[in-house]
Image 1: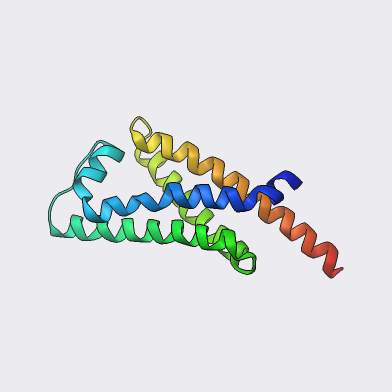
Image 2: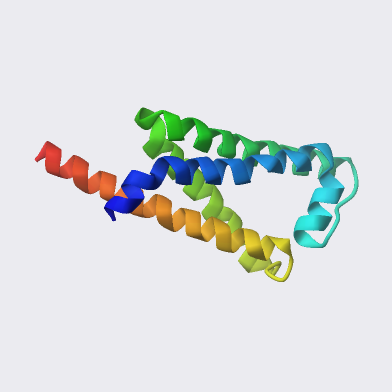
Length: 132
């Protein structure tokens, strides 16, 4: 598992760079929903919620990029990003959108969550050994 610890910076950078383009949904919410889920929402409330969702996802991506360069915040960033990605995966699976572009996103997010978890578990073991 040392390989994950050594590679966490590029893993976080890649994850962040893949996540940040969701800002597109803040600019063109209907097109983004159609391309991601094969569905569209309309109306001012839908526009507001999708745009807010997109901004929050983009912020998680930006946090991942920042955390890649700032080890002091890395664990917190990985916990927040993992929680966000797990929630997205659970919602997509629960609502059955796996046959759209969201299906690819859940597999990629699941891979990142696993890598983040391995890093965090290894970091916890290292901290425990040092503190003991």
